[in-house]
Length: 404
Length: 155
Image (cartoon, rainbow over all chains, first blue to last red; front, side, top):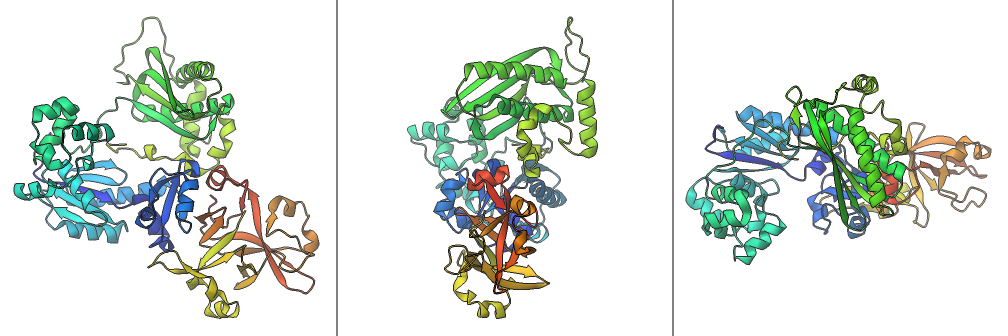
């Protein structure tokens, strides 16, 4: 894959809030929180709300008392996707190589940029209405670090080696994308607290401490672009659907309804990517801070909804038995051991009859009438969820992103 | 249900602001934020902005001093449909609002909320906020079983 001389990183400032402000001007200059997790948590906050101590992920019942005059808005991923794709279109118009990293972040080949980053920033603001921060440097790690540091609505272009060294001198190592809590702790134990100290450490030592990913960061901080811009998403190793189920539940019917909902969403994704699943994993989290996980391996890879559901049902029954009395908070179904359709190793003993006529009818009906217009009767306990259009389109439904 | 609504001061004619002494209800949510008028149920004399007959009015919210009117500030939509308010000859009205306040949470209510208008024995108008069973999202957000009937997209 071709590497580029200069890499740019565009990062939207509090994207969901900014997107709401595009269509509701009265939300400007006031503390705003966007609520997700079925209305329970703040998933995005304006800078005014952040200044009042509200953090992303905070429950609404903690956030509202901290900032009693804040206004809370319901998330709308369909609208956010419209603006995200508009933003992507603008960046594609100025660069031959663009990576759609996430709904609000994009990397691009900045070598071909014939104007200052500030002009691009102003164009995005006037055409999309979203304020962004832009970083341009010799690697994506440096570009991202620069856009982060200059937030909100900042621009930072540093390309000369000496200037890069000056820039990273005081940047805390935990600011690096890919350095989480555990890695930070490990680095601190060895006296590495700044990005500069990170670059001065022995490369082999960093690799030993933080694996090959840590070594890639080491190179990137030196200005060597080792992680290319991905103009297309890599093939999935696994596909998951699920998440929070709202209020914790021990109700078997409701838990099964969530599982079926996740299975229906999962099969959509398997169909879209034209893949078969070799193993289905069910992961549950429960209120007493535990995780539970079991899997079913198929005799031969499948995309048959009934087989997937049957496997999910077996896992559900085991979960009910083993987690009796525990209130479940999250359910995830993960399709693993994926292979392309037509390239699978067929079992000698199993005849794959393909999707049942009911599954086919459901797919065709929903293609005409809209997602979930026809759904399994087992999901009836979730009618309140299905009645709300906002729940029927999630950030993971926005395709082609290279990250989450 | 509803403990208050807020409306941008730009949407309220100066004449109404002066007539009803709404200046004291003007607030700003931030230093550079636009001013808004807050109409709260806890006010000594609660009032609401109301669109009726192509005009914006400010009318008493709930029974006020009229003991013969229902004592709540809200009207249960089910009881309205069952005819339990018919003796008051209620008329539907629209309550414009940028935001609604309930159980300590301000949330956006695009378009506003619905209400009913009734007259007391002296012919004075009173407004009640129309309510319905809360959606799942609303229940989680406010921990309330009832929510207003929204004019625009529900939440």
